[in-house]
Every structure is written in C-alpha cells, then in structure tokens.
Figure 1 (cartoon, rainbow, N blue to C red):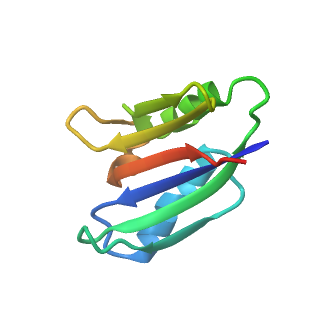
Figure 2 (spheres, helix red, strand yellow):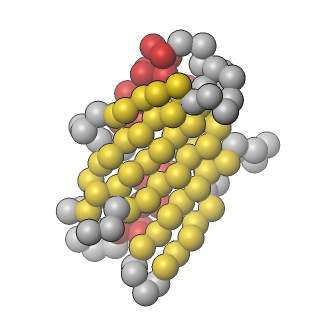
Figure 3 (tube, rainbow, N blue to C red):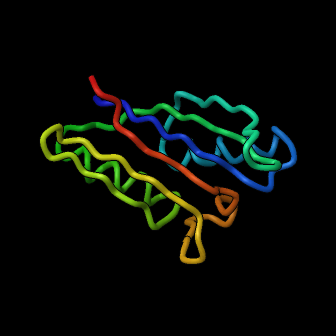
Length: 118
C-alpha cells in the first residue's frame, strides 16, 4: 500500500463545523478512514486548510488510481508526472471551468494530491 496526502483549501466557510462537514464528505468519497486535520487558513477570508492522509493500493497503477480518486471530487486537475520515480502530483485551482461531483464540494478553492515517497 502507498499513502497519499491531499491538502484542501476551502472558501466561504464561516465556521469550523462547516469545514469539518466538508472534510467528512471528502473522506467518504475517497473511502479514507484515517480522518483529517483542519486548521484556519489565514490567507483567505472564511477559509480552512484540511489535510487527509489515505492509502491507495498501488498494486497495478498508482498514477491511474490517483487520477480516479481526485476525479471523485472535482475537475480539472493539473498533473505533473515523474516517469523516473513513477510518481504523480495533481493540483486543482478553482476557475470558471471547474466541475464538482457534489454541490457541497464547490467550497473547494485549491487542492494538491501527492503520493508520499517511501
């Protein structure tokens, strides 16, 4: 098993409880049972930083699995691929072309998904 780290920055959330509800929805969508960490994100008004650490099987294609997992939340993602290390990093930036798989996810402003190095 490989571990992934997903960092999410929300917007338009005026309470930590709203941030926690959002984080729980994301964890459910990713089938992540490890929980999350949440803290105030000072660079944006009414924003929170949420960090989720989960596992991917990595048995077949961890890159494809990473893309599939992040696509459960929203799209499009910018993908950086390192063939030598067989690693991928995905970044989401909210824009006019953003699509969310759940209306509750539209508070997502920015995100980064990385597979942790062993």
